[in-house]
Length: 237
Image 1: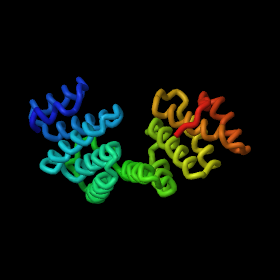
Image 2 (image 1 turned 180 degrees about the horizontal axis):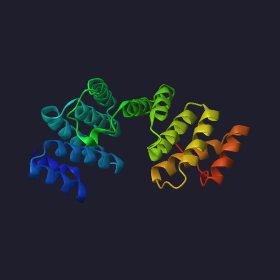
Image 3 (image 1 turned 180 degrees about the vertical axis):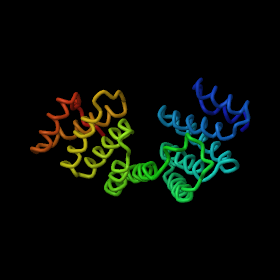
C-alpha cells in the first residue's frame, strides 16, 4: 500500500506503528489486521472517510493474500465503515459479501488467529446495524436476538454490550417490556465491566423508560438505578 494512502488514516500513533511494522516485515495479513484496526478506530472517532479508506485498503490486500475468513472480516469492516459514512447501499453490498465469504470459511485452515472472532454472531450483528441505520429497527431485532443467543459465556463484555444494544432497538421498535428486561439483564451482566459505550446504551434505555408511565417501565428504571444506571433528564434520540 502506498505511503500516501496510509497518511489518510489520521494520527493514531499505535495503529500507524503497527501498520509500518507489518509493511517492514512484509507480512501482508498482519498489514490487513492493522488496517482493520485503523478502520475501527476511525469509526469510533467519527472519521468515517478514514474508516472507509482503511477498510478498502485492507480489502485490496485481503483479496490478493487472504482466504475466506480474512475476506469475511474485512467485508464486515467495510460494511461498518460505509454505514458510518452514510452510504447504505455500499454497506449492504459489503454485508452481502461478508455473508458469502463467511459461508465459505468453515474449512479455511489457513485463517490467522485474529479472525477467530468472526462468525455468525458478527454477521448477525452487522445485519442488525444495517437495518437500524436504514430506519427498520423491527427488522433488526431477530438478528440481535440471534447474536445474543450465540455469544459464548466467555465473552461477557460483548454479551452485555449486545444485550444493551438489543434493549435500545427494542425500545425504538416500541417493545417496551422486552427492552426493559434486556436492559436489566445487561446491567446485571455489566457489573465490574468498564465501558463508556455500554454505559451510554443503558442510560439511553433508562431515559426512554423514564418517559413511559407503565408498571414495567417504572420497575425497570428503579432496577437500573439500583444497578448504577440513572436515567438522564433530557430525551435521548
